[in-house]
Image 1 (cartoon, rainbow, N blue to C red):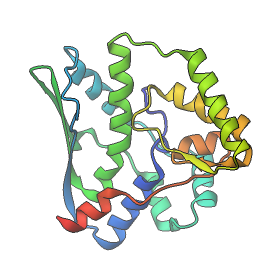
Image 2 (cartoon, rainbow, N blue to C red):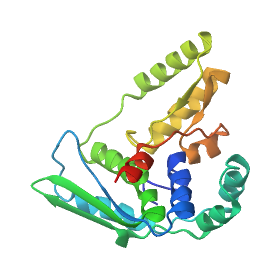
Image 3 (tube, rainbow, N blue to C red):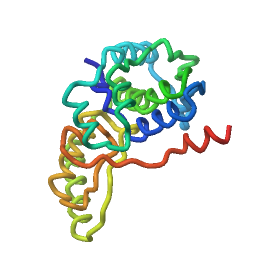
Image 4 (cartoon, rainbow, N blue to C red):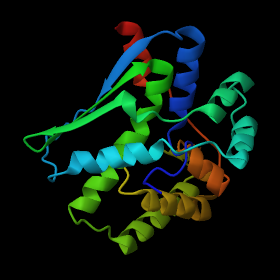
Amino acid sequence: MGIIKSILDTDLYKFTTSYAYSKLFPRAYGEFEFVDRSNGDYPDGFDLLVRRELETMSTLALTIDEEAFVRKSLPYLPPIYIDFLKGFRFDPAEVQVWMEDHKLHIKASGLLYRVTLWETPVLATISELYFRETGQQPDLKYMEESAIEKARKMKEEHITFSLFGMRRRFSFDIEDRVTELLKQHAGDSLFGTSNVYLAYKHKVNVSGTHPHEWVQFHGS
């Protein structure tokens, strides 16, 4: 199994935006292009590792339990769209991946209600692969202590917050552990997480946002 282990391992707004495209602009065609703002170099063969992960994602399918969670927790997604998700499979043919002079290039092209679903999983995949292939290791003690301290402060100050961290996460395991710690130590201050799978796993609210993508689409 690859880095992305569930169709639900994504941000909530990917599903709401996908549904909006399918409802209002079902024939809209577009392209997502990866831009590394730091213009960093990537290890040799990194594009092949990304491609392998994308191929693995093509085997993912919504499970019965995941479907039940979506129907119950995301009532604003109509049954017809959830039926679409049941049959949805990632198609790696929609995505181009290549390297030039150690720079990574990725483009996803197709009907927007489909290709929008690539965005967050691809970014999370790049992030986890990069840290892995460059030999970087997380400071688990610092991570856990920091998460617990922040959770307790939020609880003490009665500050409500949500977790939005998937696309830049060190790894799935780190985001998973942080979510677990926040739930344990923040109490009702933790409103939820944007990661639908982790909301499902840890039994917390799914919370989303209004995407820049939707505004950019209408402005294009």
